[in-house]
Amino acid sequence: MCPTQEYSKLDSLEIETNEDIIKLKLKSKPDVKFDNSEISKCLEYTKGKVLNEN
Image (cartoon, rainbow, N blue to C red):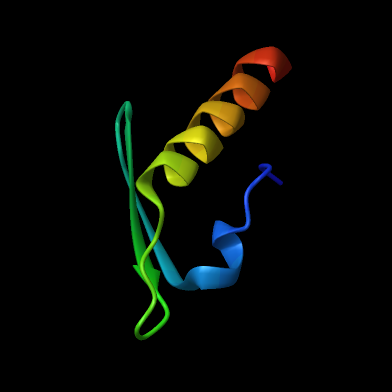
């Protein structure tokens, strides 16, 4: 799990894949906004984990 508290704000997550592209649609809980810099940190952390596994 990436080092962020943004998970507590997550209401739903949709994942779309297409050849070499992965799209994530994050929906926050009502009246809550994500911190974009924290989401970016999470994506970088996850990318690093994936690259280190291959």
